[in-house]
Image 1: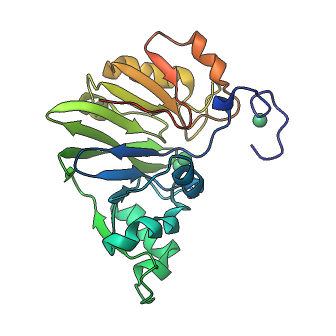
Image 2 (image 1 turned 180 degrees about the vertical axis):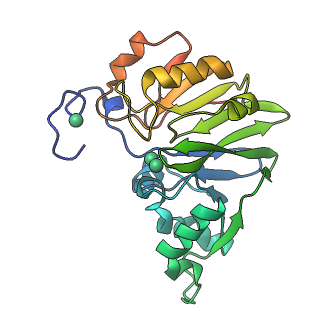
Length: 240
Ligand SMILES: [Zn+2]
Ligand SMILES: [Zn+2]
Ligand SMILES: [Zn+2]
């Protein structure tokens, strides 16, 4: 948090220094990123990211889209960048990044998005990706379920204020649930720690990782969580 003197902002645990939420997925066939927030460039440099074959967006809040133009580095050799988003999110992207979507600039270094509006499940390589519409305050945003070889590997619900039973059933028994848990105190547009744990219990996730955590929740709070629940941190890697 800018200009904050709280214990988390001044913590000596490097895991308490958090950038915006996003995930990068590597598969044998292709690599893709979910959201390009304001910190995307910093994250790509930190992780020495070399390939992005596609980008998937959860929603168009600034903390999830403002790094969009830095995809140009990855689109350059491909010629364009496949962009997957809901109709509403795509509309916002086209408005905010009009210079890219209009394709007016012929310079090859400019980002040329190749929009794919998501209406149902789609595949990137052998990964089946299913949109999970969830409430996020007054809006509805997409989480995603990632499946390979009929295994429900990961459900990613970075921003949500609730998880309807229909969605919980779709991700039942998922191996890893990555879910919004902003802080202990309830919030109008994000889940609290207790609410996130309730969802984890309902979907019977093998392991649960909290994301989109604010500075009111220190990494050390993980010690009070159930055995299979963790606080994710920047640079965390999961292998399947
Ligand atoms: Zn703080
Ligand atoms: Zn949001
Ligand atoms: Zn957010």
